[in-house]
Image (cartoon, rainbow, N blue to C red; front, side, top):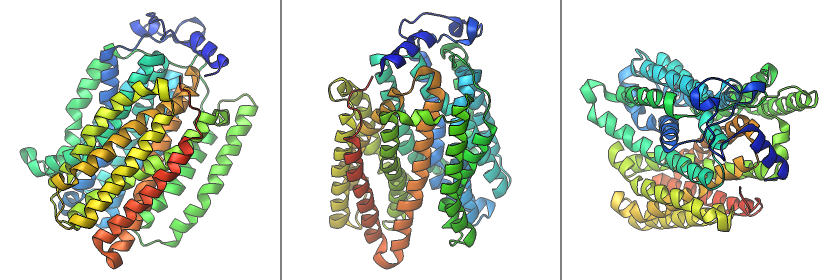
Length: 496
């Protein structure tokens, strides 16, 4: 990082020395508006990661429960699509705002508020009497996730440094990947178990005791931090940002289910115009000395700008893959949701290993760890395609395990390094905006992956069959990984 950024870090936090300031005692900000951040302990990090796992898991856990929800609530395909889409859109739209609120009002406070909101909305989802109530509760759950999750990365960024930050980001990346992969398996297990007759409702109700633990531990173990100079709200920017993302994501998620109506094409055409209007409003506000929601100056850092480009094939590929493999194994092979979920367990295991080990390579290889992960991931996809070609339709967890293990290993190298690349260029006083941008890119690209790679798969099934459609979807993701390899070579190699 630059000398200016290093100076800013020393001025706005005490994370490198571990000094216990007002954040540790809960007495409020230091004089002058700065909030010295206490050192993040192992228990505090574990609490943050437990909270982070909740929204990450809930992004995927609902997929395997949708058929049961449809039968119980008598909901059609379009409404079921909204059960998933409402969460994803509210989540992605509000993430940057959630990061900004943490910068202003304190990241521990917003983390706890978000966790409490997530618990209440999970309870509302589990008790929903009809499908549209469930859709509304899912949207509220996504909003609560958007308040909670940015505080995790921002707190790590503000309360750790050097090797400790690398290890914390490695564990964060491991949490994200494992939660995403395990979500589909856990969803299938909970639906099949039918705990106390709750059926699909258990996938939401199980969040309540976990949230209670997060709230209990978070009050005492998570250090507080905030921006040195809290900013005013950016109403115009917030509205335009939300409209631009909704105009992009709503047609991609609901437009296909509705048969591609005119409104979906009009919204897609409006999305780049709204994005341009958002950028112009933010640039004008920053030049006038205001407080834009997403300062355009953040994008002047080459590492941040190029990291956003890498996020597209990285997360779009992951989101599309998780959707397609779950559908193909059930639709084409006839596996149950539980067995189909078990097929991705080897991916989760190797992901956990390499996401913890990968940060140890960063001091020597820097961002090239991301490049290596993309290449390993591509090898895993090629192995999976070969398995599909030679073993179809006799596929199961055992035959898929080698390919899934290699894919997971590659992903484990990629995700923690991605977040480290993104946050390395962000000064601590902008940690909330930077983490919000990072996670917004992640969630938006996950939704894009489901829409694009999922559409390739679903569009080809009638003509090419499930095997042909699956191979085509894998080929699209493979091409994305090759593009990502080239993009990663343009990243700044050294990471702080």
